[in-house]
Length: 299
Image (tube, rainbow, N blue to C red; front, side, top):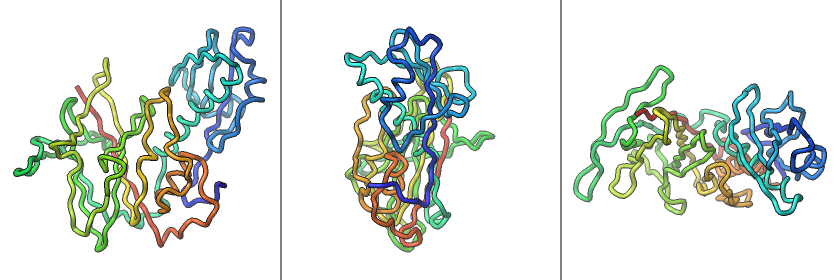
């Protein structure tokens, strides 16, 4: 498997390691760099050029800093019984950050399907039942274009296929505080996500599946980012799911092909750093598009 040229490119996350007192860290930086496994998602560099800096501290503590920031993005304590396990544990954490960032930043190469899908973010007032349709109301947007909803209320996402042919739609929610990704639609990875011509869909309409928006403890405002994907071909959406950073991230798949669609392969290239070594289908023959919407949750 190799990483061939893709219509959607990304740069590996550049990472540097620093420490204040080399005598009090688990492993000297030189030894850590020598033992660090290669990764298509990461590039080791100098602290001045790094997108992410990892500071080694006493007591097996590691702080991650974004470029130009003084407050740590996250802090971990990584005790190991065998020192040779440390580079791989750090690798998994850093690859998680890189994969999340690549997925969040992934954009379609063209606007080929931009007019296919009508999308509206709404507030669910009354969930649907077997005999009664769901009731929804509009949501306001702030000056930044973020949809605003009160904590504890249910979000609903209305979709309509305007194309003369069926399309496949997928929705995910990305939490930048925890670096986690949840699958919003289809409700389970193995459920169909096909939308027929002129068909409408109300994600989170109930009664079984609801999108209740909650605030993390101690906060009075938070932002979640939703991405809606549309493709003429199906994909395996479970590959996008990620737990919060620090929880064990089992690779959803090492398969670089998935369902074989252009969307599936481009997403796998972004989160695995590699794709199949056979030619990807021409974009004009297998297009995809996505829409991103920030949802501000307020107390």
